[in-house]
Length: 113
Length: 114
Image (cartoon, rainbow over all chains, first blue to last red; front, side):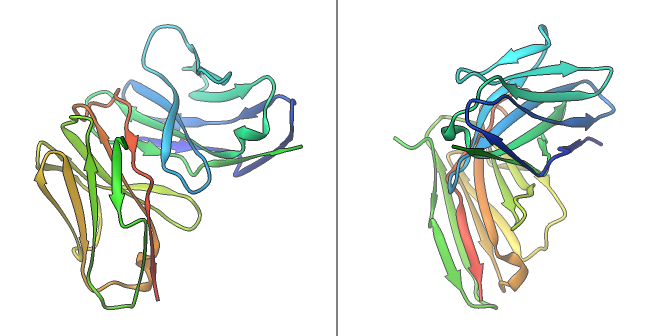
């Protein structure tokens, strides 16, 4: 069985400030880790994912996440946020050989001008 | 062109009615999914089909029945709607349904049962 915990349900942050959205997972098998973003009234879209190799993965819009196996974490960071980053962010995990993607409960990032 | 589309976008109906939500993907993917997102934004898998074959069927009331006429379509039929069925329903697809693949989501269908 696998599960995901997103420790913060809401994160308000001022524009141009750094942000970290926390995600911890549990799984009995090797994992693949994902961050999806949901803008208001839209479907989810992939932000970035870790499959193997370098533990630091980056997105095209400045977000990055680091896979930490010993701490079973996959925290998402951005050094300077924009108003347009306001959205709900979901961490998700799937296990090798599994069809199923398990989502965390989401973190609402609100960027304050 | 929209990769994963759903109709309708909004659905308001009375308790006890039967309704369907349609989903189509033009990505050529083999696997499609239905998710339910509740009022607290929690997203949970309901069903998954791979090449028209059911592969995931989570604990969902049997009032919910998915149907896949071909691998580009996965429809969701709901009988005897209840207040608790109010939610946003998302369709998604992925290439082969493998764990490492990106899932592509539709815009969602907002269902309100009165």
